[in-house]
Length: 416
Image 1 (cartoon, helix red, strand yellow):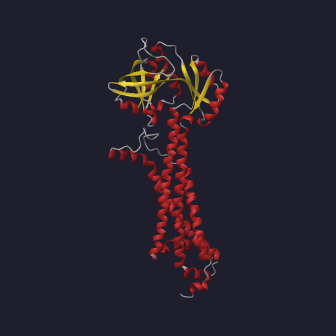
Image 2 (cartoon, rainbow, N blue to C red):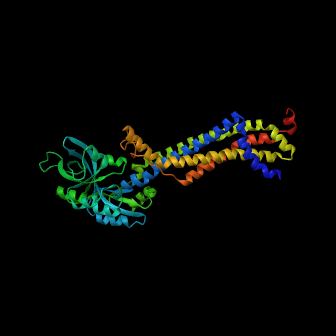
Image 3 (tube, rainbow, N blue to C red):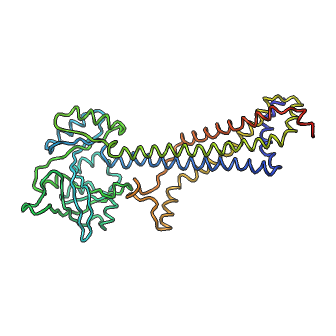
């Protein structure tokens, strides 16, 4: 019958320390430490998960997973695209040409790597559509002088949809100079759309329809390469090698792991390092329980002796203090999880509000990959954090619980 009271006594001991201010303070400190550690870990991991998600869903949707380059202009790009799209792991492909250019508007000059693409094919692929203004790709396909600019680049040039600008084309490896040979060719363009992805891509992106551009230049329509979108973007390195081996002709490939792989791995490394750091904070908070329980054991020596005299075994005493340590951990984890789940979803809005209030920019896409704070709360992370914290609380309670179990009733009651 006595053993059925182990949990009840463990619960009572969790609150009995309130009679002792030192014990009460240490118990409260243990709980608050766990609350802070769990909440901060949920928040920080959610932010790192957000960066990981935005990297995959935004940045990598704006850059080709694999690019097949030709050593010479590709005139039969339709056949090459069809050949590439026949691969079962390829989702879509589209021709691409890159132009080095300077964008001129009045006295403002910005450099850009202009991407010439097939607006109709990109419209069918749909990767760019979520970030573009309405009907931007349709207008790019229908207007020979249409141009799409990244949001940050358009802001620097003070351009909006319908605005006019001029491009000084400097394509690498091709002669685009004027007929008199006196300099690069200038072409007038009308902005038909603004691309706002909130990423570093917005800083220098400019899109034109490559077929219209070549026709305006009076040159045969050709492509420098083919943009390839894969079903599994993490298979890019393997697929790039398979594609270049299967294609006949002088081709070579690049993939996103070469162009943006360092950024992705840096995000993953930062996530792992931060998780290790914050788990160590949970460990410190959890092992505060050791100090709390040791003092409670000293305070309750007489009670422990009475229980032993009434028939409680060392195992019963051991379990009482383990239950008490787990109760402290459960309370800290519950409150920390609640706080973390309340704060994490609004963290991005809070940062944006602070930026507006103090007119400063904490995250700028010319420094960071994205210009906002992304948050992605994952329940598996919340469960792992709580399981880790509870495991540490259990381990922390073993030492004082063992010490309580070894108290001899006669020695404890001798001076009472």
